[in-house]
Amino acid sequence: MDKILTMPSLWAILPEEIAYTQQVFVSYLKNLGKGTDQLVQKASMLDIDIRKIPAGFIMDGDIAIMQVEGTITPKADLFSFLFGGSTIDVMTRDFKALVADDSVKAIVLDIDSPGGVVNGGFEFAELIFEARSAKPIVAISGTIMASMAMLIALAAEDVVITSESVVSGSLGILLNHVDISGLQKEMGVKTTSITAGKFKAISSPFEPLSKEGREDLQRQVDHVNEAMVNMVARFKGVSVETVNSEMGDGKTFLGSEGIKAGLVDRIMEPVELIERINASV
Image (cartoon, rainbow, N blue to C red; front, side, top):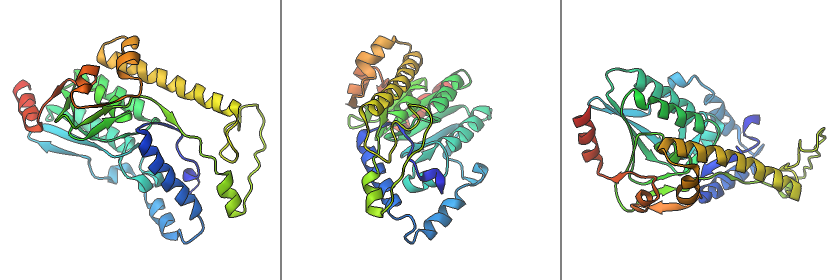
């Protein structure tokens, strides 16, 4: 249970999705010790061998269609139980298997995701990018691919959307400091952090965020965002300046706006995409 007592901190996700996540998380904290035995039992069941989790892809002939859905989190645990979505550990397992399988001629990443946690996402995107030389890898979305999901899509050699209503972009890093001091007061609890080192608890959730704490968190966000921008530049073969000015400033795009920004390659129906892949492999 201890693993859920703090939310993941660094996110690449649509800001409005964080509001929902934070609401659920605070609700979880409020209900600790109040009839949560069933939740505890369900959560403990999720610490399982990921080989027992069903595959997250389907086959269309010799083309694998792999789903990337919902909030992206590092692994199947209590956090993914609370918020659903896709987990990096399962997607990595499936993707590696598909790349190694000679009977799979191409991989389509079917994306419907607002993004997710930074941890593990960069590594998964790199895995996709490196696999380009092994077989065709295409990303497609008929709904939304934002933030971390956008980065994962950009790692593919081709990025496709199905209509002018598809949301893309929102590249950037988000960190919310959750001050639970008021919640603790309501619960009759007070936490005092005993630390060594000036910055050890500078952004503690048990007290309001100080100026110094905010500056330290901003440093972290800027550092990870720079790494993301560099990845996007490498994936798309453009300069860092181009990413910062046209792609990676956190802006969200609709339909062909994503093409103009350089994030999306074309608008195409799924059936047409499969036919095009079949013709080229």
